[in-house]
Image (cartoon, rainbow, N blue to C red; front, top):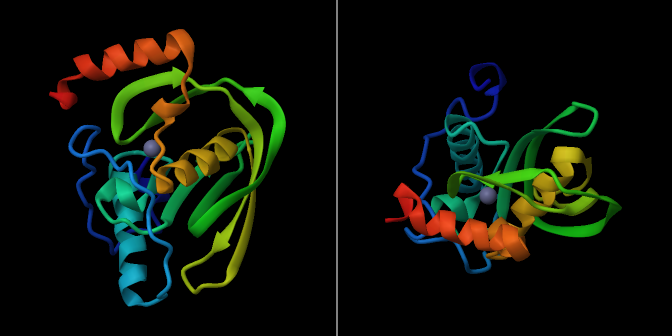
Length: 180
Ligand code: ZN
């Protein structure tokens, strides 16, 4: 699942993903203003780290870098694969039916909860060269766009859970071996 898809990140360094509580990335990131080699190295490291962790998306603040960057390699509702980088993203539209599929996070390992989100989302930002990018996603890719944009605002998917699911998640987090 990981080796065939890692055209990106081949030259990157795998960085450690601090887990929730160690410390969690809860503050909004800074917008990227300089599109240089350091940014491209960061993006390569993020791809390498995402693939090493077998994730479908990774935000820069998950590896301790407070910049508004995320990478993704994620299928949509038609199993079409989307691979790329979105910098300074914002969700510009969302809608469709609520999709209450399970959602997880590399910063909160092994815990997955049903998390209703719009099944369609559009995001805008720029690429590594600073050129405008507009993305539209369905299915898991719509979820990914929302999840990663949330990260860059300091919001975890756990914050989006409600009611009984939220209470169960909080109990699981306190009991998780990685949270001690
Ligand atoms: Zn996450």
